[in-house]
Length: 251
Image 1 (cartoon, rainbow, N blue to C red):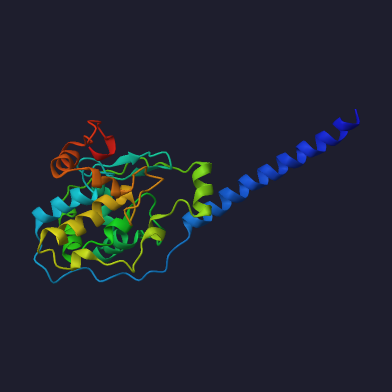
Image 2: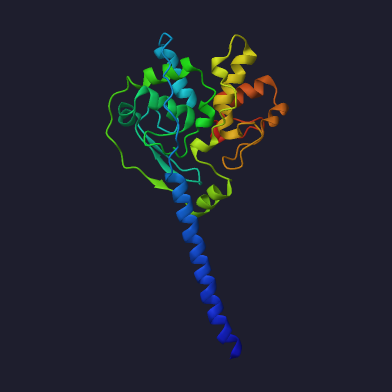
């Protein structure tokens, strides 16, 4: 039939166009993930007295421990649907970094090789103060050496497409250096301490502006207006919402 004569070339053309689109997305996204950032190494904090207890506490708060790198820095896998990336044991990575390289990784999301980290929420580390960073580094350097583990990096096609569309970002591209570093400012009252903690904890799932994060699934923090103080304390300490529902991400 005449119609079939035109259908076959049309289908072939669509397949070729589709294949070309997939190739372009993979190539462009891979280039973006492999490109390097020309950021100078910052000066590590030196004018403070290291506090190991504070370093351990902050390591847990920002997720070095009890977070992406496992309960005690032993490593782990992050699989939130957007990417599957192995967080390495800290005892195998920390010794390979100088203090300056660690500061750049923490504050800017840039690794030793100049490439961006993937899945590291450096935009929530940017508000850390110099003393916070120094304490974290001093604490982590005391951890026992660890063997490297098999590293996994799987970025689905849809995530690669979102990366090119600006709907998902590499760690280095999320950091807004125009934002205040609250940790270097006074934390002498409840408001100032809360402002600092919200910036380094809540922002990871609820967005840097607290208006929600579609990728992580965190709602706008205006939802807290319906909570009283007791309900909010229960949510923070147990992960149980006002409605009595266990919120896994808050656990």
